Length: 288
Ligand code: ADP
Image (cartoon, protein in one colour):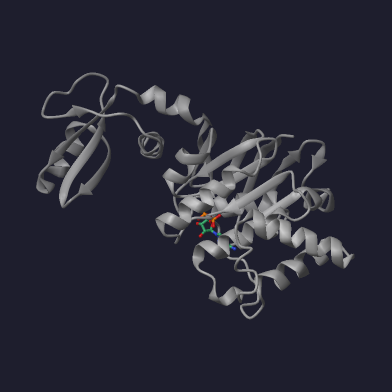
């Protein structure tokens, strides 16, 4: 099943245009929605999850008209919001048991089996008796995925899932996401470029409420291959290079400043060719 978004617009009462005519087709598999803070990602995710209404436009998931058939969509949806509430004094097992009950599984044995399967799947079985309030950021996110997986959803939305995770937790979370299944639509909304480049064969970039790029992740990187150049500079010369070249990004490495530029041919001038990355694609479109 595919998610098809057409001409979605939303202006908040304070006049902020959070979504402007967003049109996007999202196929099965992992899809990355990448954009800076305030770009409109959460607004888009919450609209798809039927938690808020757009001003205009439509969303279809397969045959389901998302905006008018909310209950139908909810049965197919697993949602891991940016901040999700749970009771800190509840154990992982009992909280999940209650979520499964809320999804309509009345039979205790069936519920127990489901909870066990989910906790095993997200690698939290050992911690099942631990109170949720004592969980690390990574454990909380994996618990969030367990609750999102109840009811075998066909569409999974995860909003900013790795913000605040340490590298090991992030890796574990990535592995978990990558195992979810290729026939399900999984939307990963994030401002972290590496999350998308690690996991998502297809992606879109959103900025100021508009989709500014959409397509195959590797194709987008390949298009810039051979055109990305890097060199170390003196920090004071930064604006000089900004004037002379199309600077995509500037980073510090071991206290030294390096800039990356887009240039069709060898610019000489001390620059060395480097492999293109998704971050180059991101800044190329963001700074267009
Ligand atoms: P992101 O998830 O990419 O950070 P959001 O969808 O949260 O972006 O926000 C998009 C824009 O809409 C931002 O400028 C934000 O301040 C604004 N915004 C979000 N929610 C509201 C709201 N309830 N009322 C007014 N403005 C909002």
